[in-house]
Length: 191
Image (cartoon, rainbow, N blue to C red):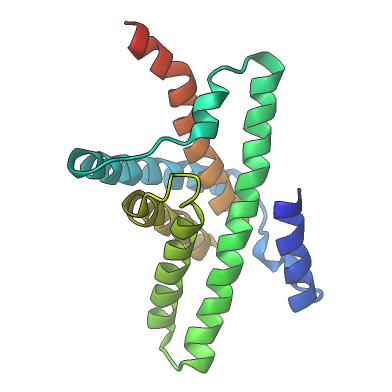
């Protein structure tokens, strides 16, 4: 909850009365965009991850591997906590993206497209970097694979100006990967 609450508190302090602007409405169009961006993200992540795995090593996420031993309510609770955490991840990425965008455009004097591109790239690299401890300091996996996934998720926000869309895509993406690890991996290893 702090992972969500603290960034929102910071946003409310930085933009009093306007902190809700990043939260757009969610209708059928937004749900379709969540699914579309999640699918694009899965394809890109799996493609890049496969190439990285072929030429290097990838590190498993231990908490997802541990979740395979959960059942019933514990597993539902795990997925629910992940959803809340992913909203927090969106906030700690989109808010710096917006701050970097303002800095690159207003202070550094970059044009609008160059500012968006620069903020998009820097925030994706930072997002990958915060995953380094989770993935045993595997720089290539975090900066290239996870950073690329972040580019897609941030684009969902840029496209819609709605953090619910990027959050929904992030949740669908991660839940699909987690579900395949938790439910399909045991089937493959026992076959």
